[in-house]
Image (cartoon, rainbow over all chains, first blue to last red; front, top):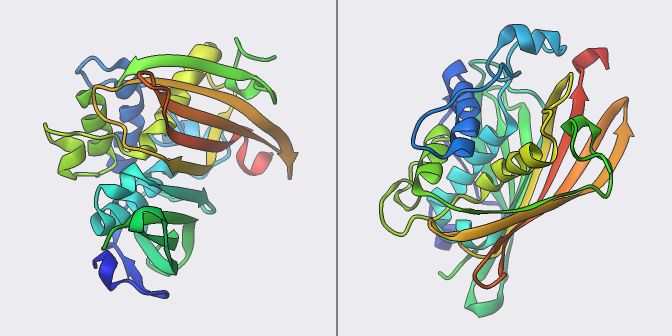
Length: 150
Length: 144
């Protein structure tokens, strides 16, 4: 999929990925690691994303994924299509409408809502973006705007 | 003003930061590794830039500074990410991040908090990323 091939209604998606316990924990550990910024991996207190007992005490049936994982997986889909220009100029909004549980399958998707001329001779792509499970149930929804000089 | 306590105490109008820091290659690589963004412009050694999603961890940076007592008695649940990217953020850039609690309201028994943040480049004051974060504070699941 390349920007030049996209038209209103074009839809594309990632391969399915399972939201494993490890994927949830990688994001949990990234938070104190980024905060410390000392070249070492850090860990933190139990969260609803990596500790079943703590999650149940918070009223959940078990651990759930941090929403930013699905946001980043959508971002990855768009970066693979539009390249690093999307990290330089654009917009991404994601809303987490259903929890993502351990081992649930997640597929990141995008659909072109509009293609418009933008300043600097670029083309603006207005996209509907979402994550769904393997039954088609939407888990995360949102929109994006990206710019490309094609 | 409710800074100085728990994040669950934050009120509309509370100001978080600003804080300054230098973006390191380690931070970008570790974050991108964790969220499986394996592109060279994030994980390589030349021309590294920051994924705009990383600004969400700047919110945690502001929380630690403004709310040293932590999350509070119950979990905080992220509801929405909404960011506009104005220019690339490069590794090595000196950055300033600040935010304001722009709203706090109750809906269906849950407390929602919006924080509007700006990430700017210290050298010229250019706005690089504007971010609105929405969370439920003191999440208590179906017991709420």
